[in-house]
Every structure is written in structure tokens, then in C-alpha cells.
Length: 118
Image (cartoon, rainbow, N blue to C red):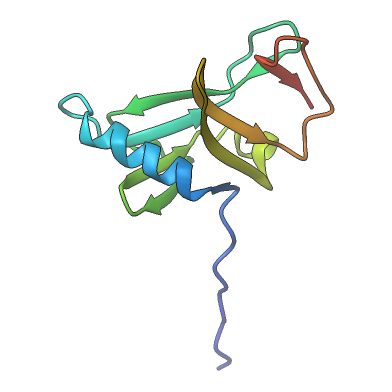
């Protein structure tokens, strides 16, 4: 009988150290019952899809689960194909703070940067 070797597949999204630190900060202040933070791509905005990051209270069957030093980060199962190879960062400046995405699957984005198309 031959042994079947399994390899660990890379996560669909890579979190920068700043993004991991922000997940840790979010989890430190999470509402009761939150088990992690979840990234999804709901249909909205002028280009079709938007990035949404929210607390999650239950693990869904097809969600991708990424363990980070500060807590669990989930990717919505229906959104994984739109996000493969993406890098998620947390950026702060004098006027704004937020998650920023470098997504190789995005073929275009709206002028305000709130939504994208694949």
C-alpha cells in the first residue's frame, strides 16, 4: 500500500504583520461570542464586489480558516476564488485607517476604491 502524501496549501490571502496586529486588536476588543474576524466580498458598489471585514460568531463549513498570532481570521467560502493570491494590509495615516487589499484577480476598481470587479 502506498502512502498518500498531503501538502498544506497556502492560504488564499496573506496577511501582513500590520494586518495581523489589527486582527489581534479587533479580537482583544471583540464582542462576546465572537470567534474571529471574517473577510467576505459582498456584491455592492459601482464595480460589483466590495471587501467586508466583520466579526464572526460561528464557523461556516466552507470558510477558509487562517490562524494568526492574535486570533482566527476567516475567509468566506464563496469569496475565496475572488481573493486567491491577495495580500491584506492595515494602513493608517493622519486622515484615515483601514484594510488595504492587493488583489491580483481584480480587473478593475471604482474611482473611490470601495469596490472591484473580477
